[in-house]
Length: 578
View (cartoon, rainbow, N blue to C red):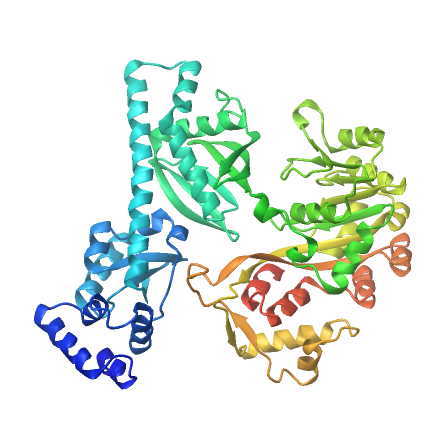
């Protein structure tokens, strides 16, 4: 159906005005909606809302700042301007292309050609002219900024090569000059503004790739000429106070910068590869990283267990999970909840991530023999009340942690196991005597991170049969002392059961998710569990006791968050699959 006719039928614009504008558009061979907006006959959002409905194409409001330059470059600027279309997101191998006139056959043909040339699949979405112009301006600004920095950098490197300046001192002066400084600053600022958690600068045969990790996934953001890679790495080394001339072994460091009027820390790790040094930078933004236990996703009985364990006068609290599951963030949240002016709080970390007021934080340096075991021996002479140990890695550290907890200290640490019940067998494997474990451990917590649904656009749907059966199965297994709608779903066979799925909007840059949240399981030491540990403990026996004491598994905690609209079932299944 014609858009103009619908606008008339719905009394959005009067018939006479609409027909005059339509006739003028045909005469001048311009899109009718462009003329409707030019003559201010209708509001832009109203027009494109109707257009989305008529064409059956979703309307998007992507934020220009959240679109990586590499995505924008899939369609050249002149083509984007001429056909009023521009890439707005990339999900897997599919590119979402924002179009003002998706009904334009010439634009469709051009898009088919560009997709074949760029080897990408595409899906069209509708964007308003104002959104399109904002993205186009951002594209030009990013391109000019990056291109300008690259041009200056290349010219400086060419001058260096011509002059034959090869000494380390002169090279250091070069990388401290504006071109390299500007290039690194562009990368760091884009990462912080895009809320990336990590930056990867990776050498290749022809060019270097810059990738950002966002919500747990890596996205290519920028490609640099191979010739500037060493200069960029050197600049980062100088900021981190690392050895510029040492390229054979890995190095670790950190530095701070003020971006958008707030201090942001960056943790740096270099790694030698066959093609050059790779740099990984962790973005430690205190506005994002420092959270309370509730903000992390702990709640109900699990939250009470953790607070009870951390609040005891002594004992060991272990946080378990794979690398990247947020264990360190949880330890910081625990420290936030228990630190007091009257307590001496000391931490041993490798590396120190966030600097906390009131906590004496010590950085491990294994290369000089200062490891967790050595640090623990010294820390006990500092009269601590609460000790945080970054990780229990070996028998010596495990034994010292257990003895510290037995001698009147609260000890918080992490351990690499798949679940909470695996913490006890893991300590036994490390050689800790079983008669020491029961009186030492207060609680073991395991966690994973799932992406959080965008509250602005999440969509309520009826789950498919297989998903519904899985949810009901887990609801039936949940501790019976719970109360709430989940028990009603279990009792009625899932009547009126609904879940939420990602959709995508302007607020979340069409991804459907904003941020991440944890799903948890917490095993608390009880008299019954102590008896099992002192005997001949197996994971099966420990799991049986966990069920008896009402422990919520990570999958069950995740399903409750699905029912509350906090995350999607796909996310919970992804992180809890064995």
